[in-house]
Length: 199
Image 1 (cartoon, one colour):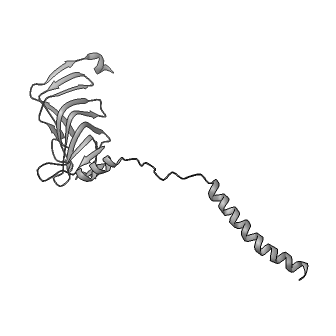
Image 2: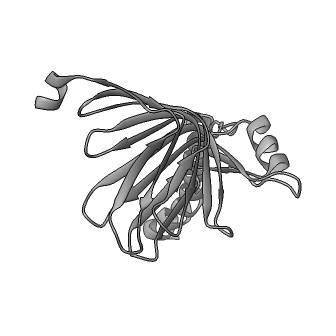
Image 3: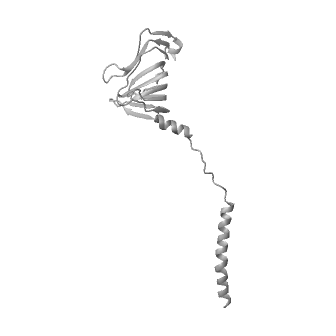
């Protein structure tokens, strides 16, 4: 047997042994992989969402019959049952008026009924407008197919001319196609501040 044939025979044995050695070294020196990776939700969170049919960050967007923009969103919402309406926490709304003005709504909780075209804001409700009016109340009922709302209870507020309170507030167009107005009724009290009005 010549020298070349002996070298080929030797390499046929040596190379597979070297490959096995390299593979075993790779497995021995590789770091262990963490298989118990925690996700953004705990098992309890997942169980609660499945049991209560909870939805994270629901968002409703639509337009009124006149083309005004309506947005309602929340941090967490439940589907509700046959005996109760769907409920949401950190309930927020935004009504974009045709004249460029905006009414924003913010509350601790609320519910939305797209089938009835209504949304209800409850608990520390704050209503603000782009022309400088800020109103607080406990309950606000609004429409989703037109810019309209009312507070059945007392309101407190501030505006360009001073601080005020009233037994009730409504907002909406006084006539079809007209501009949106805010109306305060039932014992309105105003603390006029001339310096505020001059700004």
